[in-house]
Length: 526
Image (cartoon, rainbow, N blue to C red; front, side, top):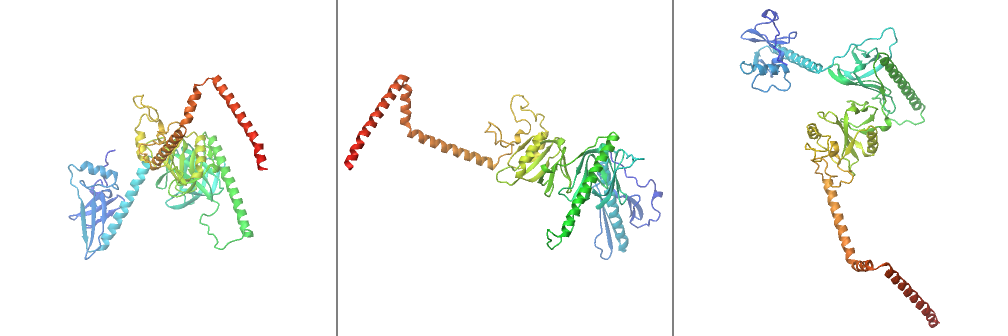
C-alpha cells in the first residue's frame, strides 16, 4: 500500500481562530499540534511526533518535541504510514528533528504536554484498532426472530470481557446467530456460519457451567480480535470466603448448603442443556448446521498449556480447557502428529507437542503431564487415528518446523533420486521402539546426541564382553567333551548299540559284586 499524504487543513482559513502568535496549541479534532515558528502558527500532524519531553522547570519551563526523521531508526512503535512517508521523502526532503520551546509561564507548556501525550495515545490506539480490523472477515448482520419466542439464557457472564470489566447480560438465539446484550448495552453477535465448534460443559467438579464457541474467523470484542467466546454462570463464587473454624460434617447448616448447591448445579445444567437443544433446533430450522459437543471428563488429564496447571479434556473434535483463561482449544482436524517429550524412567511427568498441519505455524504444547496418564492419552490418539511418537528430550521445534516446511518429499521414504532410502514423515522423531532395527533405534533427530542413549550403548557393550568371557571359560573347560562328541559322530548305529549293551553288562556285573560284598561286611561287624 502506498503512503497516504497527511492533509489536516485544506487551507489557512481552516486553522483555529484562537491561536496566539507564540502559543503551542493542540487541535484534538484535526489531530494536529500547532507550533509557533518565527511567530507564525505551523501545524504538525500528531503522527509525525516521535515523543514529547517536559524537563523539570528551573527559572523557566521547557517543552521539547522530537519528530520522526530520515537517517535515524524509526522504531517499531512508529505509525506504518509515517515510516513509508519518511522513506519516500528521505532522498530529497529536509526534516525537522527537534524543536524546543521556552516559557516563563509553566502552566501553558504543561497543559500542552498533557494534551499532546493524550492525542498521541488516542492516535496510537486508533491505529492498533485499524490493524486489528484490517484482516477481519466481514460478518452478516443478525436477523432477529419475530413473532416467535426466542430461546434465552439470563444472568450470564461473558469472557473475554469488555475493557477489563466484568461483562454480564443475556444470550438470545435468533434466526442466523446469537446475540449477547450486556447490562451496559454492549452487544456481541455470534453468527451460526462462523461457529467452528460449539461446546457445552456441564458443572461437575468445576465451579461453573458454560457454553463456549470456537470461531472460524475472529470477531471484535471491545478493541481486540477474539476467536473464542464463552458464556458461563458460576455455581459457587470463585472468591467465596472459607470459614476459619472447622465445621462438623453433621452440621445441619453445612448439609443444607451442600444440598442447595447440588440442586443449583442440577438446575443450571438442565437450563443450559435445554438452551443448547433449542439453539440447535433454531439453527437447523434456518438451514444452518450446529451441534454442541460435551467434553469427555473420563479422558481428561492435568497439564500446563500456558503458565499454570489446568484440567484438559477432549471432545469429539477438540482438545480443550475452558475453565481457566487464556482458553486452550486445539482443533484435532488441524493436528498432523503428536510427539511426547521427556519420556524417561527417571521423570515423573512428560510434555506433549501437537504439530499443526500448517508447518509454518508453531506446534501447541502441553507440559508437565503426569506419567500415569500417558497410556490413556495414547489409546485416545489411536482411536482418533492420530499418529504419535515419543522421545527422551525436548526438541528445538522452531528449527524442526522450518526444516520440515522446506522438505517437498517429507512424507516419502526415498530421497529425490527415488533410490536412497530415508525415514518417511515423522519417523525421525521415534527415539526408540522400532522393531528389528537396533542400530537406528537411537538415531532420532539430527541433534539427538543424548547422554542416556550413549549410556545404554556402553552398558550393552559391557554385557556383551562379559558374555564372551563366560563363553570362552566354558569352552576351555569342556575340550574333552568336544573330543568325545567328535568320536560319537564317527560311529554308526550298530556300533553305538553294541557299545550300549556292553555298558549295561558292565553295570550289572558291578552291581552284583557290590551285593556279594555287603553281607561279608555285616558279619565282620558282628
